[in-house]
Length: 117
Length: 113
Image (cartoon, rainbow over all chains, first blue to last red; front, side):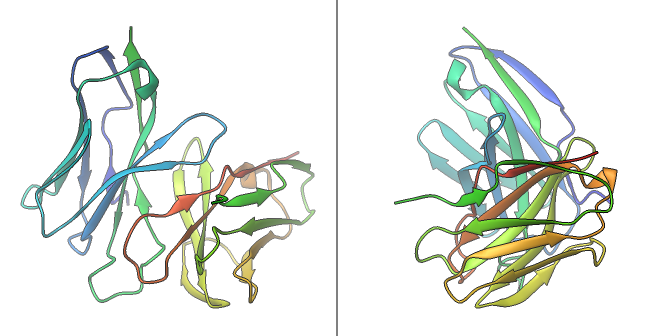
């Protein structure tokens, strides 16, 4: 049972254009969402997060949008740069739901982003 | 500020053996989580430790175990290795309050022959 899904295994965009990575979840208890970037032979690096009380969070070129009714979130990268080429993972947690899932993240399968010069 | 350090980075074992992986969290971080990454299953949660106590456990067999020491360093052990245990094992640390992201190490690449 995959509770977090990234349905696009790969995405290719031109430098300077917008990259949009999508993620869907099924567990209504998830209330905190994160995006990680991963290069080969390295651990995931945190990019940006959003709490379920918000519908948008921005950090520089990165913006995450959350649509709770659709159980969908997306990561927008504007403008895309060749250095952004990596695997992007969406992750979710029931962190604030009164549970004990502090360090437990449920990850999607990842989307390989390639930004062409 | 030093990041999360995992040792060893690479190791090769044979079926039936056991392995111990080590993780030193970022200074001040008291929560340590372990994840397994495989091509087929993606990143899967193994367990989390806080103050030397296991706080959360994923869906893995009892061959996978861990512990945390008083200095927050953590080890995980896999006994009776199987071919399917070949994976990248990632450790992550965080503040204990459950707010904020996990900081991952570079991982330990285990190959079981």
